Image (cartoon, one colour):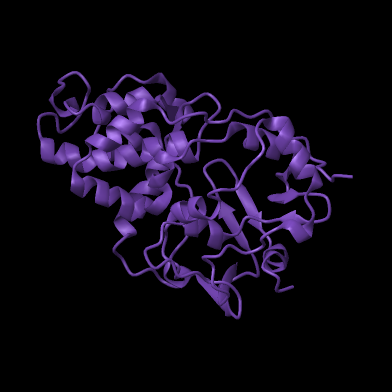
Length: 303
């Protein structure tokens, strides 16, 4: 008998495809601007080339326990680990030098200032904490946006300044559409505050925040694209088609059928606690989620 989540999961909307205009925006960025985006977002940009498997997502939802951030199956649980998430994002394996970014309170005026848009710009949704994708695209996605006089850009006509702000605007749009999507399709303006801090800190020396425990997991990416590596590993494997077929497979899964650690994760270290308290709180745009040490260590076969 399958153990599904006892917490009722809220209805969700799966992202079926990346908006064409976001692809056009990315393709139109100058080479230096693309490098700046990749430097901050890492391999997450590779999600632009990933086609969501909606049937798999729908089949997995009943097994997700949002109260504990785990998937519950017949006789085991799966905990997404920081190492896996950072690995797929292509981020630095040295967590000891990184400082986790917390959501910043961003007012509508601060949001406009960060993007060099006049505070007189008309967008009623900003007061509620979000904006439409088109609000950003008209100003920074459109390759001639810097020439438009009625968009309220404070650097209208100056392409160099416009290009510099274009990087931040793209990252806000990308994160808001692909990584932290809202059900209504709008973009959280708080992302601008987080990404602004990230771009300013990317070349700084971070003070130690996270501690590590020798003998657990750490990964060395060695320039490897983990998304591409995953695609290589599953080549030739036949998967079910349709939500019902996936549900049937997931209900039959047992612990002995699971690959507990991915091939690109050499078993040396794992991050599972902070320097001050014996746990980690993952701070998102809309909530704070727990990251339980015992679950992580058990997931990695160390507890």
